[in-house]
Length: 425
Ligand code: SF4
Image (cartoon, rainbow, N blue to C red; front, side):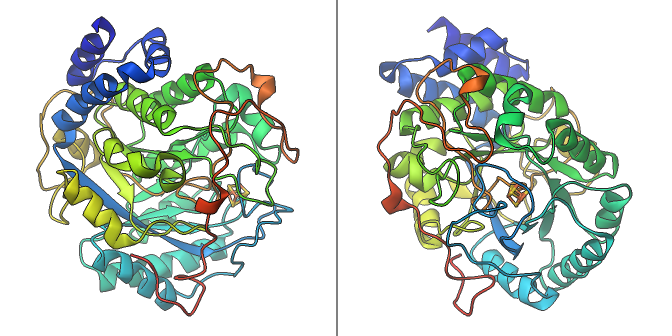
């Protein structure tokens, strides 16, 4: 297929595909799917070999958010029966993080619900970062606290944070239909503040919220312009009690096409399979490892993932290996540009060249990422739904369905951080 040969050549050179090429990936047929995965897999192996980075989420503060992100189980007015608790103490967060590290995670993602941190919140998180770093030598820490105010990124960096996550989530054109309490521009600004402070930027998307193929390509191209070091790709978990609860629009095949498109557009960036993988990819999860080089281990912010040991078995069975703590995640040209923040030893396949050329390794999903502030649901396969088709914040909008509801696969998190039960890692 000429399209795939072209995309592989471009990916190996870190050359940006055209929008038409990215759209064409999303429009491929099921008959072509394995060819698409194989082609994007070549690009993945060029920059990341067969390594899989494990990340571990710690939800520092859960629920009761004043913002109205439609996809989120922690949003204003959410009726989802999630855990609700205020800030974990540094030693509690450190214990939760240690479980993930023991399971093989090399990055801990500290997430808190809310519009953004107060300066007092930044103090608390700084103490938590210090506690985690003291207990776990060499661990990377990513903070995900919402919109940042002036100076807060610098303070987090000074406290030892390696990365900051804040997702764009969807295209600029459709953002206002998903959230009304802050803007797309606010999100872009926070990612840029993190980068300016020397933090490795992590910023990604949520697929399945009713967006069109064009929206997906728009947000991935916008991310490429922002140049984060990692891009988490979430698939909407349609939580009961949120406006998008009925949006079951993703198939495993659709998810694989989306991941392949992200890999072609961001060839040398850590592409992370985030919230919703168990729910939407199901038994096809191992194929996604040919596209992404990073996943979350165990549970998400407000939902439970498959057992941590099952994650590890899946990686081994598919012929991949968990990335060790002494290995640099990013290709050398990106790690060097970051200046040693997130892992800098070496192990990178295919050194040289650089499309993006910036800083370090990835973080967790902002709000929206890794499961808790989960994604919302889309309008299905290869559909060119106009922006107005996206559900408005606070309302439930019917959409064409391409996948049956699998509410049986959505389990609210009842263990780990904020509970007395052992975490899943
Ligand atoms: S995604 Fe973040 S900001 Fe939005 S409602 Fe959820 S916790 Fe609040």
